[in-house]
Amino acid sequence: MEKQLVKVLLRVVQSPEERFAGSKSLRGFLNDYNIGWVKGVACCFDGPAKTRIRELLKVEGISPDTPPDAWEGLTRAECLALGRNEKWSGSPARRDRLAIKTLPGRPLRVGNQSLILPPRCHLEADALVIGAIVEHETVLLVENWECFDRIHEVRLDFSSAGPNPLVLWRGGSGDVRANASQAFMGLLKKPVWAFVDYDPAGLLIAATLPWLEGVIAPEPNVLAELLQKHGLHDRYRSQLPQAAAALDQVSHPAVASLWPLLRQAGRALPQEIFI
Image (cartoon, rainbow, N blue to C red; front, top):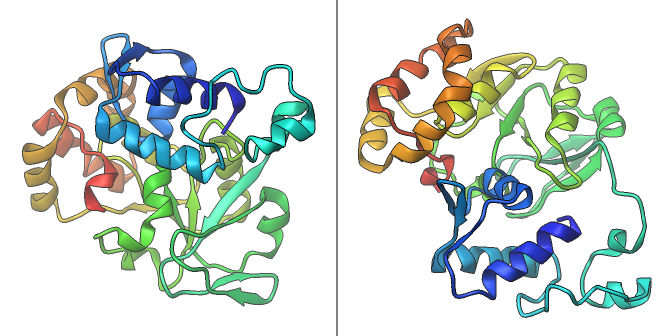
């Protein structure tokens, strides 16, 4: 995470309020991690959402009780003592990084080597370096971090993506960015299956992926039922103006077949519903 985002998240978890100004950092966080929700111009986080944010901060090595201004005026060594944030003391941010893994129990094949990763573990690597040595025949692109991190818990059939797809996080606003994963897939030239949110923005992401072969989704009748039971009206409506025209013209059959289901339901379904 970037320094500014961590400072904002600390203010969120340390505040009794649920509504916060919809800053660029908070909106980017909400889109990347699907934690909280947007209401008007505000970003909202209830108790369970704040608990998940605290867990993310701990993963970064940062105590949720750390004062948001704790890094001001500290030396590099003092900054490091507060968490894994050496880049905050002047080092350039890393670029072109990828986060990759495999489906549970399947080997990650890179550079003539096979590696079995435990659950909730992944390999972060330079896109250009790993692209030259990866030995997977298909790619499973996952939109949101939580589903990527907990891919072993996702209750969906991934068999269409091949026997051992390279599981790739799309990236967010930090070190691992969406443009790096997009360029990586373009250079790799392997069939891509998209596991995205079932909302206009998610389908638009899928439609713009290079070498897209298909979209991971439940059977149409199951998806329609889930949209009715658990779908989010506000999320669908907020994304519609930016995505509707492009989706109405989309030509890829995997995306074109899902768009009418969302149109009819008028709701959005986060991919985390399958964890």
